[in-house]
Length: 319
Image (cartoon, rainbow, N blue to C red; front, side, top):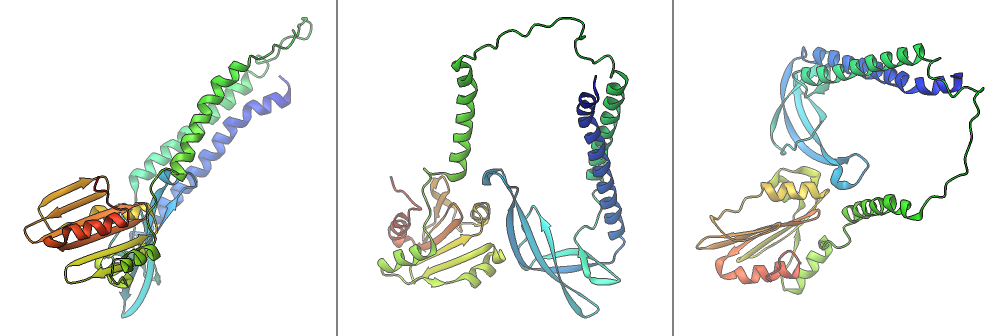
């Protein structure tokens, strides 16, 4: 085997060794740092804001929402601010436990216990990578003379090139085409019904004789979701109330939809992403579409009027 082919065969196991060493070193350093942080004094912090973003760079449905939770805490009568990242939301006003650096109280962490399980899993994976890389490197090196090409003293006939049948291409191109088409439809959703924006909500309400007011700060505090709610408008009359929310992601709109409760026991409409309940006196609804959420309520005699408004907004289909 010539040197070029030998090096190309040894490239992958060597990469495995390097990746295993880097991964093992990083997780060990991170675990040691977490262990050191657990020795810091702890205190209670108050969540003052919450934002989020989508991790990853693929289609939005394969991404995961990461929540950035801003909090405030006091050490020796001095107020400090910090941020933590989590896969789970936390409402504004909640109290959380943090640890702070006694030498620099502005440095804080929400890691109160080191993640030993993650450390062991990643370390084992690193060891497997290193061991596999070393094993295959030794095997390839020891057999570098056995893994040789056909001897040059034996004639070898290169026959004419075979012409590929066009149908053979279709067997690969058709599945790939359907796969790419599926990705496009999943990402762009061209056939999905679009939600209205804040300006359209205001216009629809004004056309029906209602006044929609900016209620962003009030609804942010009411639902404790901070800057995750980007826009909010409300109609509030003696008989009807409708709240329109625009959130920063569709996942957060779904989260708000799931967490919002309807203060009535009898469910009268249960459709995909539209739920309505009533009692003897009141009628309530909640709905979400893409990154928007709508919540409403009215006196029972105004039920049809509320449903008509939601139908005008394309959040309800009576058919």
